[in-house]
Image (cartoon, rainbow over the protein chains, first blue to last red):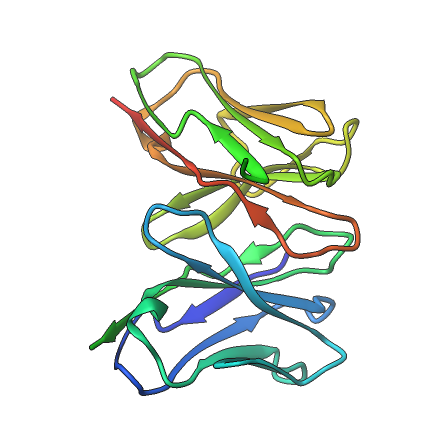
Length: 112
Length: 112
């Protein structure tokens, strides 16, 4: 089955700097790659996703890139703000056939 | 009202007791999931259901059972709770073509 590795497990950045979180997956049939943000005391919330027919997707300060050949994808957050502090999860699946398999999460701290 | 509601939010129970965690949704989606979150281990799939008559085991189903009472309701039971089932439990829903998950706020379960 699918296996998703996520790095780093913790990340601290200064406010205004960029943050990058990387994930690799094992099943070449996976073609849906979402990212979730979990704030303290809340459930994870979808922030951006990408499908395998595109290499990059942007939404304001957040972008995700996908390299299907290398089987890895990354989350990029620019101009970080204190409210970006949270735990971020990547995931992968074959949509319609299999549930999401999640990485172990990255705790991002943005230091003001 | 929240799209995905989990009850209870917090529960402390004793070893050997049976406990049920409930999940209901108003999104009208067919697909429902139960995940468990432990520090450093991310989100691991317990059970999932793609429609009312469909139940599937996930990665860590031992010690758990589920019931899909209706399209909108999916319950998770611990038949005889043990301390290593202490964790944060999340219910999630998704559509057949709306791949992103909507999570509930979670149930924090402590088994003493």
